[in-house]
Amino acid sequence: MPPMKSSYDVIVCGAGAAGSVIAARLSEDPGRSVLLLEAGGHNKRLSVRAPAAFSSQFNSKLDWEYWTEPEENLFGRSLHEPRGKLMGGCSSMNAMMYVRGSAYDYDSWVDQGATGWSAEECLPYFKRSEDNADLHDRYHGKGGPMHVETNDPDPVTRRIVDACVEAGFERLDDLNGAQQEGVAFTQVNHKNGMRHDAATAFLGPAQKRPNLTIVKGALVHRVIVRDGRVETVEYSQGKKVTTVGANDEVVLAAGAFGTPEILQRSGVGPADHLRSVGVDPIVDLPAVGRHLMEHPFQFVNWELAGDEIGLADITHPKHLAQWVATRKGKLSSNVGEALAFFRTDPSLPAPDMELVIAPLFFWEHGKVAHPRPAFSIGLSYVGPTSRGSVMIGSSDPTQKGKVRLNMLSTDAEVAAIVRGVHKAREVAAMPALAGTRGLELNPGVWVEDDYALAQWVRSTVEHTYHPTCTARIGTPEEGACDAELRVHGVPNLRIGDASAMPTITHGNTHAPTLMIGERCAAFIRGEKAAPVAAGTAAATATA
Ligand SMILES: Cc1cc2nc3c(=O)[nH]c(=O)nc-3n(C[C@H](O)[C@H](O)[C@H](O)COP(=O)(O)OP(=O)(O)OC[C@H]3O[C@@H](n4cnc5c(N)ncnc54)[C@H](O)[C@@H]3O)c2cc1C
Image (cartoon, rainbow, N blue to C red; front, side, top):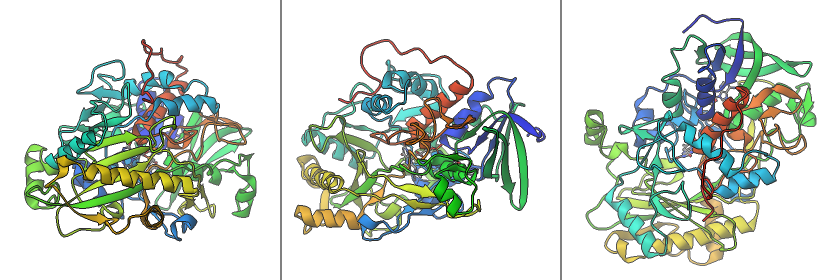
């Protein structure tokens, strides 16, 4: 690593999904010095590399381990929100599903003021990141840093996909192409049987550049703003506090919890709240930390009948030995091996339910085991309307903010998930699963009518690990930054991560966050908007 300087042209705070993209892209220009500050450590670990081991990172030192405040619509339950505290951030902890969402998402961002973010305008930036091994058409990129390939799933997953088709889902090759509604094997960020996270993909080739400095174990406290510009960034490594200068710009890429926390500690946020916790307000932006959106996630599980066991024996040492020797076998599964999208209400503008198909028992983040082989259909409700918040409780950077998801604040959201449970049961009842489907474990056949199902949903629902929108593009009243990601009132400070989404996408959030990282870097480089791809269809159509 080059010796530390007193100032850098650009300082990127957070080396997660988007921060890795931004630091790598900006350091492609040898004339620009870039400092990347990351609170966590390295990501060269078995639990990161072996795809199926991701949930073993939960509650470890690799997890920021946020817990929500008691959720009033979930009978007062607090939910665990794991967040990756390591190089690659959640990109090094996630389930590797590569899903862009619906064209409707990006087109509706434009309607909300995010000029230049339509599906067609975002498509070139998705493709710029991508190295797709299997799909070669106008929707997909080749030769980009991030490897994408299509799963070769377990036989149990194949049967469930066949059952989806029998239940009326269209079989697709690509949920990121012309049509999102249907069922397909999951596209994943895997390479050679290993996770391909953003730090590996983007920073791997960039880390030896003399103009890129990466500091691990660096907790960003705040940015120091004078006369409407960030002058310095304050961070600590252990007890040592350092201040480093920013010649041009600072990018906050600390994730949907970390980014609004840094903004608020810096005096950029809701002035009343900041005063109440002892922070002097500098720019009054009431929406910073608000508008938190997350996808509810409800699992339905069945025991497996017959001879197939799916991934039930995945912890057996023989699978580890096979993976170490060949990078193949059960540990190379991302668990969510196939996906299906549908509308719980035909009048909706985009599919609002994503079925995540897994050939094992998955319940409470994988913390609860079942003694016999099972399979799961997760219902990720990708059309939520509830908004929560993340608010600091003090100016102390070692104290995490208070997270309130305010999940399921409307009965309509619960009703959509209940319709999802009915759909999952319909799939499980199909002939393709006769002889494979055993006892329904959750909710259990006795939980039958919609009222009972709704109560069960409120008492057991989790989330899909997708917090977003807490420093979003929008007006100074409704958002934190403009459409080029510049923070209102502090134009050399940008938001470069999932916090910037105006509303949450109808799908998993990693691929959209990589795209936001590409766009943030392009704005800083002063690049003209990338040309819109030829053709007429949208980037990922609403179907
Ligand atoms: C368990 C899990 C499973 C998931 N599965 C999927 C999936 O299969 N597909 C999908 O599309 N999405 C998935 N996601 C979500 C996806 O990974 C995230 O949306 C995405 O990584 C968000 O990127 P980000 O850059 O906004 O934040 P992050 O990737 O969280 O990066 C933020 C970085 O900032 C660092 N940081 C935070 N605060 C500070 C500070 N004060 N100082 C310095 N550094 C700081 C963090 O340590 C982290 O490295 C999953 C997430 C989790 C946790």
